[in-house]
Amino acid sequence: MDAITAIQRRTSVRRFRPDPVPRDVIERLLDCAVRAPNHKLTEPWRFAVLTGAARDRYAAMRARQRLARFSAPDGEEARSAADKMRRETEETPAIVVVVCAVSPDERTREEDFAAAMMATANLLIAAASLGLGTYLRTGSIMQDPEVEALVGLEQGFRVVGVVSLGYPASEEPPRRRRPAAELTRWVQG
Image 1 (cartoon, rainbow, N blue to C red):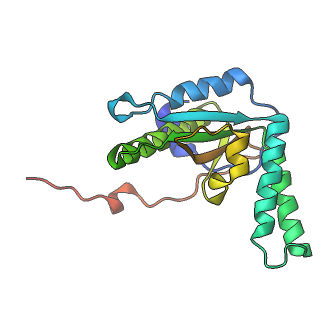
Image 2 (image 1 turned 45 degrees about the vertical axis):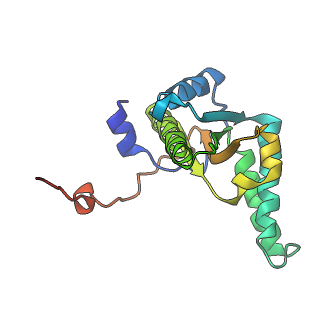
């Protein structure tokens, strides 16, 4: 599938078939990711791919974090939500954790973050072009010290996104987006 079709068809996928994503396919996606523009060729991105037992450890971390959101973490509702979170994560064939360098220079730090997110977009589009589904997550899990330890986060880096990756369990049409024409101002002169 060509890039434009992949972009137009891409949607966030929450449920995956149990089929593993072959390592060479994931490597191909990461090779696409690192083709993203990056100012002064800083190549600020790093990736950790979680499968098998590593993915299951991450699933347990997500479940614990979900429990912590409840005022009564021992309650049935909290346990049910945590179990669902664990199960969904364990049923995800691969998880790609996107990491970015944190420059002491504010401008470089912003440019590097943008580059890491463009690399993530490349990964999502490349995955869609190969018939794979993805779901990009951000949020508090990215600052969890256990997650940082799991992925071997080095000093001077931070997690900027977590991508669930696999073959979609079902096909979903992309969600509606406002047309670009409604969001664009043409400036001349």
